[in-house]
Image (cartoon, rainbow, N blue to C red; front, side, top):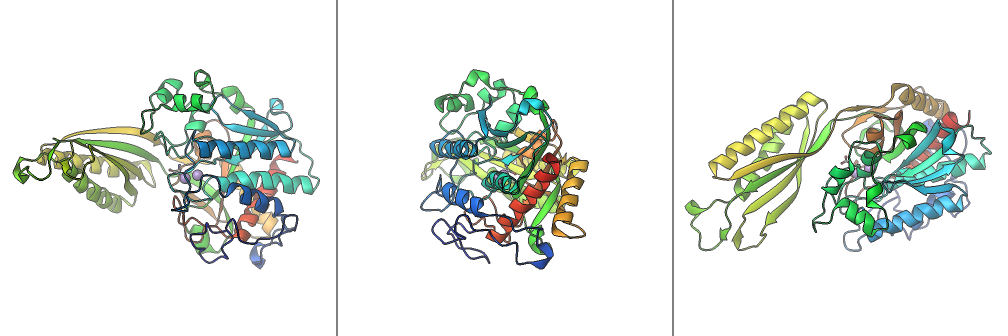
Length: 448
Ligand code: HGY
Ligand code: MN
Ligand code: MN
């Protein structure tokens, strides 16, 4: 379904376009290799998708600005609560603002939990996060429609602030709950207005003093499965609608502060300048070189300049590096090479440089038994000898939780691979196939 910024190979089915009428069964995929055992009722998926689609979408860019603890985030949270309530699920918000919807008593333990996040990067796409949350409710609808008998509690979760778009740290909600981000550290996270994460939570009606690790909650979870749009083209290239995740690359964020001397852009001779923009620019090019050499990725996607005037040589240029590698050695090599080059450039221009690691996530290997169970369920459901098992460079809440709970992920085909962009896209059939796959996995895990 496209986001109105032009479908890519599928019929655009944005908010206004027609799609199967609510209540109609969406026929199983047209691709014979991928027919599930029964048509998955995609009606509830389409209805939820239509309701969620307009929330936080910027009219000019068509991208989403669902940043943590803002009005758009509050609307998404209200949507989640309404979905839980309308299904008679027990709704709760934990001490870190993550939303949970329960079928059965989570206190019984060994719960199966699914879900994802609803927040976005600045001008993000419609699918990254929401596809997993909508598919979770739709998969539950599907299982209830079949009369499935749940023998374990089933939870659906919306983890808050997964993208870190406002406070700079990804997966803040799940990190707080998993104890990977302390309340003290959270108090030090501020947005561009200087508002801290807990202050923003308080303004949204939450108790900032309550935030912190929640081991009791995690102890009740026996398995967490997150469905997510693929942020790459592996499934498009293999011709599969759904795949299983194997691992997440190690990745992190580093802030480079280049400090120079503010001065007049029109009257200061070139030889008299201490312009921090110069070593910053050279460092951006060095990042690309280092990443290519190491078979990794490195991106300076965010910059802030002080005083940020057209006719003023900056006093400070602050650039944020996002870097990820197939293994820890390559990541260390890339970041080390970039920092070394940055220091040489800064010295050459008489600029002071500070480099601060703002976040880091080591390589995540998803639980092998759960990964293999998902692959087996999908192979059985689709009558296929094997399903793709693929790694990713994208971070996820399932990665953060993997230190506390057996976790696994399903990926849904993204024909262009584009993500973190209004052009992010997934075809209707593939989304409905994802619901079917998630329903089969949840049935296998929670309806024994
Ligand atoms: O940055 C990531 O990989 C994720 O989208 N938070
Ligand atoms: Mn994302
Ligand atoms: Mn995501």
